[in-house]
Length: 192
Length: 190
Length: 227
Image 1 (cartoon, rainbow over the protein chains, first blue to last red):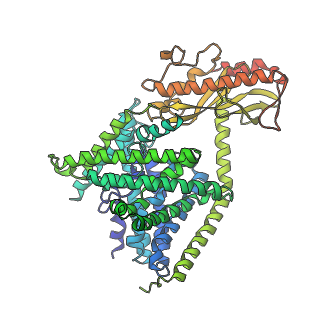
Image 2: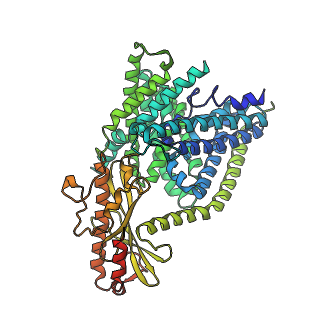
């Protein structure tokens, strides 16, 4: 398979958020600002890359019936590593993302890629797939975060553009749903 | 009184789906018919309560005494996954009728972040066992409520004339957004 | 692909090995991040205290618990001294009446109960509204600086107090006032009980001697008066 295509498919064509609609909980939950979206996206990318790599490495020694439990243990280990490392070195971001970091473990994208891709492909393809999908996820979260931050507080990555309160609804829960709705519609249009 | 506040808070004020964004996948996936929404709600209520009891006990009698709280994520997800399997097997044997109603939803529940989320939340909030159980029942009820309302609206959406690009998921997301807006009216109630 | 057979032995062994490896790996990561995590927490607490009692970073901080005036969760006091001179008390207080439940507030008092400074530590209030209680977002809470709650009624104006509520976030403002009020009542009760000179507080080995705290009241009022 063309590795470049394998890498880029996660951004638009098979974007996990906009097209596959996987991992919506963190997508909606943490994207109150662009930086939170990016942080969450990168944390997920790390887990996805590592779990894809490890799973494709050991896919042949895992008996079929305990496949899923083994995958879950591997994924949960990497999630815990991310959780601990973030608490140690970026405590502020860790506090912001809170509950959603341990919840990476139930993010459908991670187990989905492990099951659908890494357990069937070579190590290199799986790594590239994990990285591409992860960055695609990070890309989607950053875009949604940026849109909500821009409309909700007239700021981008923490820099205030207009010094007044924004349209608050976009920072609040309803804005997450509505913002995502329009982004999905736009990406679908581009893909056509 | 305190318990009533926990329940009302979990159902309305901090609705697990519409305010905390947990369990969005089943919310979007299985909510096109009211009937399936009711089934899913029931399954979540059942598994969530069980999972919270078991994980609470594991946290307080295994992880904390051995000082390995960092194993929380692994332990919890394994407990939930095996619990779901067990429930499925037991239901099949004991109550085929209930299995008929809930069975198809059970595998989906393992990756439902609402279950793991609530199990972690009760530890963060330092609830005791009774409070944890009440909190999880409240959250499951909140999940079911959101799901059923949403399904009810979606059943009617088929008849509407929606612009091409917004059909399907985008329109559903807008509806969810409006629902979330409605639920914000409950904020500050507790 | 030559998959292993799903025999019972194979399955058990695989799961066991996978779990063992991940447990060892996690143990290793946990031990190497334990230090930095604690440092980060200590640093965060230190910064929080330093905001409400300036000079805390150079001086000594002594931690003790004081029972809450209304019987709830205990309040944590941090007595800040520098070269034996009292800088003030930082009080970690809370309210459960926030818009989204629990909020945690740090407030600094000088020995007369005048608020040196205050800030919110943890909250889940609405971004753009209730989060204006935080210094990172707005300077709303600077209205409390230099006020003595004995004269300054810690209540929003709508409820007959002296506090300007945040526009459209009265509940958050009320909760913040509630937290400050709880801290002040705790502080007064603590002062009264420590007037018997030597008081044993809930931290069993910490003895607070109140007598020498009266010495330098002027310098403390200056801190309260600035800004």
